[in-house]
Image (tube, rainbow, N blue to C red; front, side, top):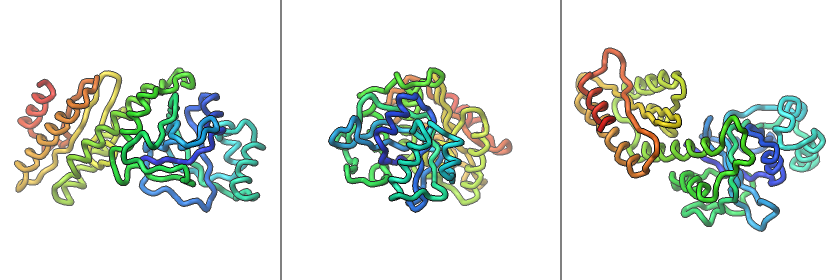
Length: 302
């Protein structure tokens, strides 16, 4: 689970907002440092000086999808206005300015989806433990020192409000935003509980079961986890946890998984989600335990 604050041109962002672009592409010069530990679905916050103001703030975000190596011509031919400029000439001028007069043969381009803009910026001094200055030149990771920073930013943005005017009517950014808040709150709970235990063989099987679960519609991995899965729709949230054991540690693994369900339930109850929360177990067919399944069912109905 990673979030990045990315220094972004305010005029380009305003163009995206006015055009109601829900997918955008950012170009980066080839000599810029690569992102590390940044995965599909992670959040890239736009750190910009809105309306030519004095200080920079976080004005919105998008979901990281992928990196593409593209030339200027490929970038414009494939994405045109999704680059943030109304003409190829304006795009070329921006790249030439950043490259000190030169156009690189290829650029590392970030493809971003599900863009959300805030009604007003979230400034760094609003967020406790957020160390972000106007002197930032490129980007910085937000959650390295405090894993809760992303949730704090989203909570502050929720108070400011989400810009619905720029919304695509087919995909409400307010719904995208609420789901992102839930994702990161659940990821924090997962981090509090800690990484999965067990032998290397047990952990490998847990990962495999989670990967199989993610092939089902709308299931995804909980941010920061390799074995716990999440499903969300407008009315419910499901969390799937692996139950993997060997003969000599069966009772221990049962206690652990029931303990995890109980801890998740405790913290989620404090967050007062409006959607129904249920849990299910991921287990191989030959390792299913009806009594434990019944325990989880009782917890769901309790």
